[in-house]
Structures are given as structure tokens and as C-alpha cells.
Length: 582
Image 1 (cartoon, rainbow, N blue to C red):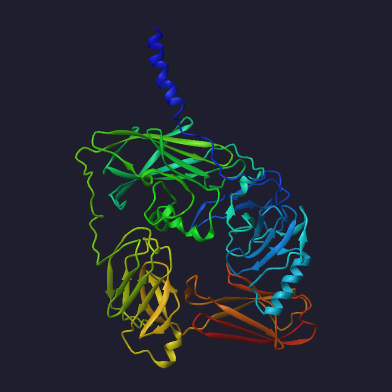
Image 2 (spheres, rainbow, N blue to C red):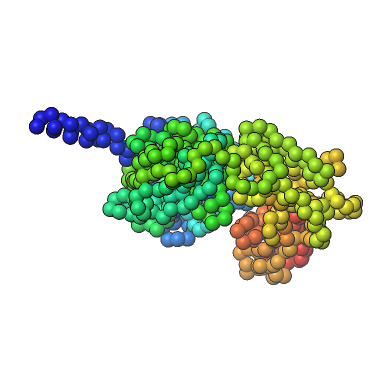
């Protein structure tokens, strides 16, 4: 009897020591009582650190407004000094950086306004530089702050969708963002992450995708399962992706998780943790997530195996790069554990085995037509009569089987063939060079108006352009269709609040727009406003295309001449000029 009992107990002891770890892991030792919350109300989050966003990992936490509108007071999280102030049309909008003596910097973004002292300084700098956008680094003794000092008001400036505070904690020496929730901020969180769907990728020996299928998950008790408990695989090498979101008490937002681990038969094969990253590597999001799912369905799967060109630092363990390797007749148990910073976790468990008669040998990619194979770990160049393309090493995440087509284009405004480079469902990490030769003579007066156009479907994007050796060249960051186009249409200026008699008004404003959007690396609409020949500040809200001047004493009572000039990326210009009384 004793012998039989030992035989029975031993497997249980082994299992007890091999179950997946459910608590999140943290590498750094962060002060938990140094910072206070940057707002007076309870911390309700609309976004978490490392959350999957288009082309980037979210670098902070998004704190919701107490009333759902701009105006909540924002406070310095600790003693320090204002080390940077930036006003941006997009991005963080009005942002403030405070450096602290403990080696960290806190960032407060999308502010509606700064406190009075900072606001006066910012406006003075804008008038000195004659620019709405500024990026300034005050000396350490210019604006000292104490913990709890009000530094601004919560807002919705820049690339923001609703009033909130984007709050970051960075390592001052590197400016790498760290997960603010590791610093002891109190957020009520008793809810485990929720798992929505599993994606199964059949792979060859180069980790190239041969096929994929999505599987709906079933919640049973505290865990998740797949229907039937077993997933039949189409290949011997398989990767997984998981759609999973974190949730908090008292809010309905679907937020990003902190950690995700994958086990094969209790052995850890893949693990990532969103504790910190650098901004230089943030674009690896396009390798981390299922990019095609993101751009075609706005659906975010965490890829649980590494693409060959993904060098993100968040991965702690990548046994066989996260790829599950099975032989015919073999069965394995897969366990996936998703955790949040508070220690809540959810577990998905299922079995896998290879389908009968499925090929488990290395195969080429799916039967697709292509003209070129571009290795991900090399520089690549294509030269044809009408096209020059150069991709430096690091541009791609995996080998690209490029289908290149040349399509004649006779539409008005086109001055070249359309060069179709694969399609937009394939991610690109770095900018690469493209050059296009015109197919017809471009009149001299149009030369400054032409640009390399990204023309995918009905979308036209100005990617800039410079002439070199008879080619119009530009730096681009996406695959798809490109051509040379011309833009001769000037921007549009519409009066919103403006008239001859402005005596009773607090501001005047205009809506400005253009017919062609610009790529992120190409300057968009720019504007200059003058009153009686003197530059005046116009605040730009990119979300609605509105520029506004608020009367603040710069414009004195009396009759004035107002002149607004708006230019697009190729120099087309519209001028609005009127007299008004103040």
C-alpha cells in the first residue's frame, strides 16, 4: 500500500512544480511610493502601457476625465523641474515633461492648456519663433515644481480621441518608457484578461506562413478552451496568435494585457512582458501583431512566435522562436496564460496533433505569383526601365515574395505608369527608397507640383519627391501602388468665426483643408497669419482642421488688416485677406 501511494503522489508533485506561473514577472525594481497620481480623481484607464496600436505600442496609460470633458486639473507626480515643453499639431498635442531627481521623467500629454506661468512662456516662445508648433527644453532652474503642483488641464489636443491624460514614466537617461502601473499607482483591478479568439498558423522551416485559421474560444469556469479540446494542425510546425484584452473595474474599455506566456507540455516556449521598450523599436508592433488582421479587419492578435526580422526587446523566452514542432502521431498540451499588472490571469488550455496525411515537410509559401524574392536580412534593390527600389537591411520582418506589376494609367493628373509593389497587407519596418520615371513630358510649370503618390484604391497620399537622374524619388514606408501625380489645386480656407466687426468676440477661426493627404514624413498644410504685417498665433486643431486666434491683447482695439496664407505640400497657396474692427 505504501508503494502504491508513492507512485500515485509522485506525478502530482511533478505537476505541482510544472504548472504555468500565474503572477506577472517584473525585471526592474521600481519605487512604489515616490509618485502620486497626476489627477485628483480615481484612476480609471482608457488605455494601458504596451497596448497594441496602429504602427506603435502605447507608451503610457490613458487616464479618463472625471466628467468626460476637458478641464480636469493635472498635477506633477513628484518634485522636479520642467525639462521639455512641446506643442504639436498631432501626436501628443500639448505635452509637458518633468524630470525628477530619482532618475525618472514623467510625461503629461494631450493637455488642453498649461498653467498660467507655463502658458505665458509657451506663447512668448511661439511669437519669438513665429510658429504654433514648438519643442523647447528649459534649463533645470527655469520651472521647478513640487509634488502636487498643478501644471495644466486635461484635454484632447493632438492625435487624441476624447478628453484624457496620456501619462508616461520614462527612464531619464534613455527616455525609454516604463509601465507606469509598476510604480504603485492605485488602479482598482479585480478582472482577469478576457480571451476572444485563437489563430493557428501553419509554418515552414523558415517560419513562413502556409495558411492560417481562427478558432473561437469557449469560457469554462475560470479558464478557456477550444471546442472539442483538440486542434488539428495542417503542418508539423505551428505558431499561435491570441486575441486577448485586459479589463478594469468601473470602466468598459478593452485594454492591452501585460504579459502572455505559451507552454508546450508545461515547458515555457514563448513569453513577452510589457514592462519597457524603446521608441526606436515601437514599430515592431507590426511584426508582433497579425498585421493583415489589423489593416483589413481592425483586429489585434498577439503573435506568439517571432517573425525572423522582429528584434523587439519585450520577449523574455523564445524556445524555437515560439514555434510548436510536432511529429506525426505526437500529441501536445498547449497552455497560454495572459496576465495583467495586478496579477489577474486567464488560462487557455487545449491539445494539438497533426491531421492524418498532413504534410509536415518544409514547403514554399502559398501558391502565389511573384517576380522577386527579397530576403529580410539583406539589402534589396530593383532596377527596371521605370522603377528604382532600394530596401536597406531591416526593412522587412521576413522574406518578401514580391509581385511587381506595371499598369498603364491614363487618368488626369498621372504622369507615369502605376507601379504595384505587392499590396498593403505586408508590413514594412523602415523607410525605403523608390524612384519612378515619368512616361510623358512634364511641363516646366508643373515640375514643382508633382510628387510620388501612394495610390491604393481611392486613397491618394503625397509621399514627397525629388528629381534625380530622370527619376522622381521619395522615401516611403509601405507596400502598394505608386505613381507620379501632380497637384495644382490650392488649399481651401473657410470662415468659421470671422467678420468685419469682431468687437464682441473672444476669438476668430477658420477651417483649412487640402485635396491631397500627406505621408507622415511629408510636411502637411502650413499656415501663416498676420495682422497689420505682424505675425499672430493661430492654434491648430488637426482633428477638425480648424485654426483659431484667441484675442489676448496682442491685437489692440481699432481697425486692422488680417492676412492668412495657407500652403500645401507642393506649394499651392491660398490667401485670405480682410479688414476687421476690434
